Image (cartoon, rainbow, N blue to C red; front, side, top):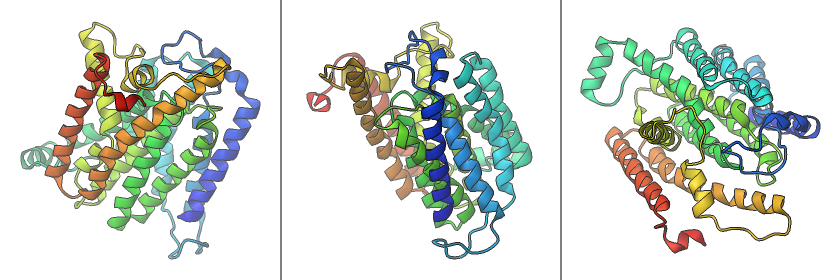
Length: 368
């Protein structure tokens, strides 16, 4: 597992470095007027391409190895299902990278491509949500198994866009992805699912290779491609973990991912009540409000440096917010009722915090 992660990290960090060096011109198509833009200059948005190379290299070597490797007692060998994961990942990843290069792929088409990844997951990998942790719903899934397929399809289709929504500042979505991947890998190891754990750790390692160039220097962004890779891989891992291991509560991955999931749901709600299409980008997401109303202005003679430093100070607020859900999820991954309670607590806390920021009622210590 260690050597697979090392390969993923090294390939991703080297590929990202080459993108920074030779493909900075690709960022010129990203308009200055974009509402979610919080940086100056042209920064390439092809971090997803670097991560995809890191993942593909690591997974391929994991399948190909036939003998024990250093640092990995027991000779972890990934099975052929990994190729099906990679095949399911490609439509979403390639569409996201194409959008990062051209800025011409509409939300409808990108949603269709992530939906294609979801369809491949349920057809090639037989992915389905077998239970929801509540007796009456579990009975319903037994009588209507297509509902489990629909939930799996929704997860793989929607989570990439949820990660894309929270991908607004240097290191934000990348660190959230690493935290979630490692939490899923921890529970996978607890139940003996070493292959799944290896894929998740290598995903975290490839993300780490990207973050070398993304945080704090902001020389490379993940773009839609990176967000879609995180979303698809984590969705596949979440469904697989629950499907393969009956002792894992289906509310465990939901609590891990409650921040990007609820950010998406709340965003759809607030846009709908204002009569705006949910596909229209705006600058009213939770992380954007933190940037504008909590993070103090940075004083520096260089404007670009000033924007970068303020950008970097935003992400740790959301990392802490994520850890507050990950810790109870890892501690109570078997206990459905406790996990449900923490999900409800997060939703209430999020709404209260959002309204407090909007109404300028944030405690002074948070702005220090």
